[in-house]
Amino acid sequence: MLKVGEKLYEGKAKILYATEDPALVIQYFKDDATAFNAQKRGTIMDKGVCNNKISSALFQVMEQAGVPTHFVKQLSDREMLVKRLEIIPLEVTMRNITAGGMSRMLGIEEGIVLKQPVFEWHYKSDPLGDPLMNDDHILALQLATTQELETIRRLSSKVNDTLKTYFATRGIDLVDFKLEFGRYRGHILLGDEISPDTCRFWEQGTKKKLDKDRFRRDLGDVEAAYQEMLRRVLG
Ligand code: TMP
Image (cartoon, rainbow, N blue to C red; front, side, top):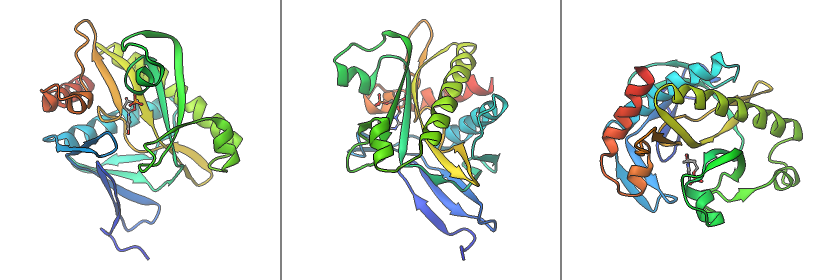
């Protein structure tokens, strides 16, 4: 039996706590920030509050767009009630503009608008640094079924289309983002968070970075960028 309030899991940016309902958990958002597989560590003041509020709003936008998520409700500044998923150990990235890992891997400059979105599977493994993998790796290792991969691809495209439009109307280019999915009562749900920790946001016109790259790259004004993204989402 789970004890109410028992810590079930602590990750780099969030903690999961048990509730009286075994199917539901509380996702608590911390101010801790890490980069480069936790080789770089720091704190971003009120990041947890911003990410909780931004994610809560964006999960509701996703539900309205027909993407089922683990979100149940926002409980407080730093807490969100979510369905307890069996997390699939894959990270999906979707890219609309070159940056970060894709620019490094292929030796291309950042900021090139891609002719079509780029979908990537990564194996969720901190010791290995979340390496890129393809469908064959996933199926051969039985990490997910063909049908689950199809569902995740379809939902990820829907997330991209919806978020791109949503942020465009708020003066932001959605460069790329990372998603995690899990199983819940036979269905695939979008889990984790959608926030400046897991997306790249560039202000239209100025190209100013309004996401965790300000922390990763020591660009300054880190807290202000999270607050600005919260303002754009709520505003
Ligand atoms: P990447 O260019 O470093 O592969 O990152 C792609 C997107 O995924 C970017 O929006 C940041 C996000 N991301 C995470 O959410 N977690 C991670 O561990 C990494 C490396 C990237």
